[in-house]
Length: 411
Image (cartoon, rainbow, N blue to C red):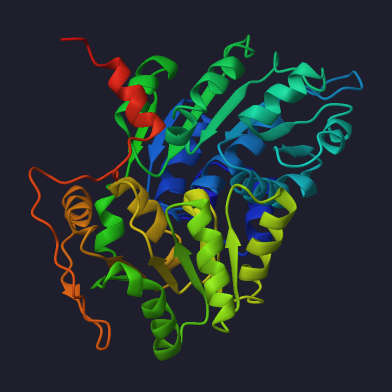
C-alpha cells in the first residue's frame, strides 16, 4: 500500500512528497482511512512507528474540508494534548511541515516559558492547537482561546495524560469541549487505566494494537545487559564510550540530581556531556537537546523526561545507567534508538541491588538477556536473596503507587 491509496487529497499528497515519504508505516496505513472517515481511534504501537503523521495528515485534510468561517477569528477545530514540553515542540514541528504550506495556522503552547507570546500567537484564533494541559488551562483562564468549537481531539501519549498529576487537568480540559468531537487516543503502551478510560471516553473506536514485544524482538535493536558494581557504573560508561567508539549516547538515570551529577563527572573526565531534566529552564532544555541532535555534545544524560516521543535521528546507543521503574518505561527508553528502520544498541547496567528489579522487567517485557561481564569491571557484589517477584518500582512508592493503594477496598 502507498499513500495515494489511503484517501489523502492531492494537496496532502504534495505535502507527503515534499517530506520525502513514499510508503506509509503499518499504523499509518490502518489509521489514516479511519480518521478520514471520522471514526474514533485507539492505537498503541511501539515508538518510532510514525503515529504523529498518522493523525496529522488526515486531520489537516478534514480541517481543510470543513466550512470556512466568515468572521475574523479562526475557530480551533483540532486540539492535540501532550504530556511534555519537548514532545509538544516535536509534534508542532511535524504539524507545521504539513499545515503551513496549506494556509492553516497551528499554535504550540507549553509551560516553562512566558505565556505572553503564546497569547499573541492565538490572537485571531488558530486551526490547530498543540498544548500541554497545564498551559492550555492557563490560556483559557486568560481568555486567550475557546474550546467550544473543537471537532477533533488528540491525546498523544495518552497513558501519561491519565497518570496522577495530569488526570485532573485532563478532565478539566475535557469539560470545556462542549460539542461532539472525534477522539484519537495514541500511546506506545496500553495500560489498564487507559483501557478503562477508553471504554467510556471513545465511541466505537478502531482498535489498532501492535505488540510491544515486537520492539524487543526487532533485529535492529541489539540489547545487552552488563553486570557491574554500583560504584563502577560511571567508570564502565566512560570505558565503553572510549573502547566502543560511541559517538552519541543517550544515558538514562533515575533522578534529576543523578542526571546533573553524572553529566558533571563525565565533563570532568573529558567527555562532552550535558544534562536534561525537569528542573532546567525550558530554554536550557531545548539547547541541551539541540546540541545533542547536532552532535555538539557526545553524551546526553537524562531522566525519563526524554523517554517518550522525543525523536533523535540515527541515535546509535541508549544506556540505562539506572534501570527504569517498569517494563513499559524500558520499552520507551530503548525505543529512542533504532527508529525509522535504523540500527541501534540498548545497554543496561545491572548492579547487585538492581538484579531482582531487572528480572521482573525481563519477565514483563518477555525478553531474556544473558548478563555480560566486561574485563576490568567484574562485579564483586552478589544479589541478595529475594522473595516473590522483586521490587520493580524501587524502595519508595511513587505517587502513582500511593494513588493505587488508595483505590484498594479496605479490609
